[in-house]
Image (cartoon, rainbow, N blue to C red; front, side, top):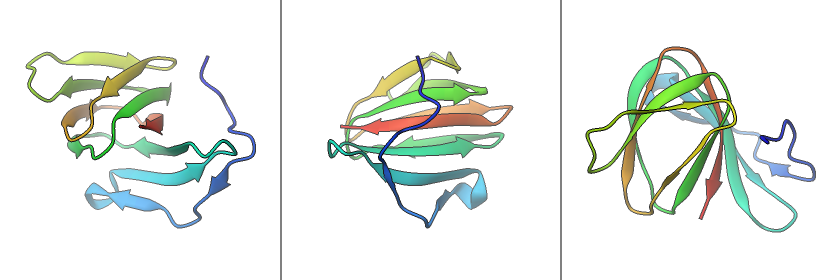
Length: 105
């Protein structure tokens, strides 16, 4: 089940703004040292590049995503997760706001 709160997290107050404001997120560090970001992608088709491996977890809304090296678009909606390897990329197509938690590494 997707959490509605991340208790005990330290939050960066300055937002990460990407793609001319189509994606806005905040970085979090949890008490166990794990790093995440929470954010929203507004309607657009965007390509994200990864340094570390990522798990994208949909909190609300939906998107279609395509992992690097594939031609297949898959759907992600609330409660769904998908994994992206390090040093890779993925495309997202969003028609309604896609709210997410990104779990790093």
